[in-house]
Length: 310
Ligand code: ZN
Image 1: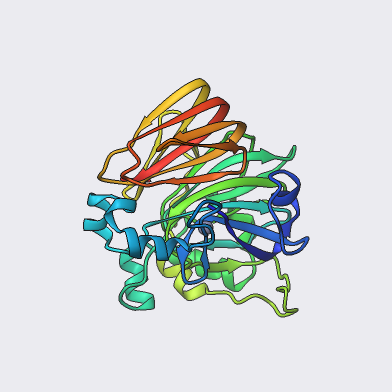
Image 2: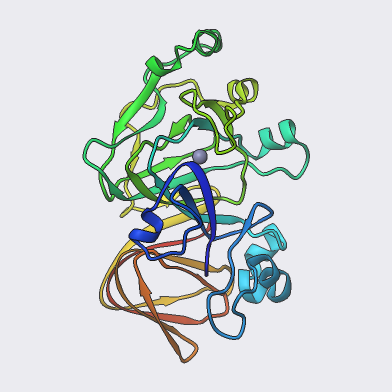
């Protein structure tokens, strides 16, 4: 797929410099690699369907694309959203609601957001925020926000390439500067921003904060010692399962007709073949494999994230 690119106040040039993607400006923050969302659609890259949006594909091919079980559970709503994120500067401190809270706070049909991050690169000293550094009562949290003292309660974690973070809805989080990640999440764009370092947006105005909603959904228990996940064991959430695979030679993926597969190349290069077609695959590429693809053969020296709906 070819991504939808997003300019962000905190973005940079890495999506071009590292992956060779076309970027709209020097503050490009996100590539929405596999996306069927009103705020951004990825499209087919090459072949007879070149330029077709993911939502149009899902609407036309239904279970042949997403799989019988996924269609049964989600209809033509594509359940996942895959991004690369170039955090040239700190992202805002934020939290996402779960499905139930999203429906309550935003109206029926709104989807929550549980996500995970796989770190492709991190500059020396790079850090991110994962939850609070101590348990807080609702009153302590409110006071900290009112007094602009939230920074002293943030749990900053050192980040290294290959680290994985699982971020269930309700977890306070912020990607720090100098970090390049692949993000796998529920298909939702619902973010409650708690603190933005008093920055101005690309339009020159302070970015909106959503303090009340954030306080309503945030987990106030400190997650000390359980920040990082083990990607080789797999990250299993109610919404997706993700595993890291190191291919050295040939690897065959047998695709179940029940669900589509996504392969994100996070290192190396090679080829990917299915249905008599062979395509190159390299770091920064994302493939959506239809549920009816049968067997997919990957060859080369590369590191992949394999993800599918749980
Ligand atoms: Zn987030």
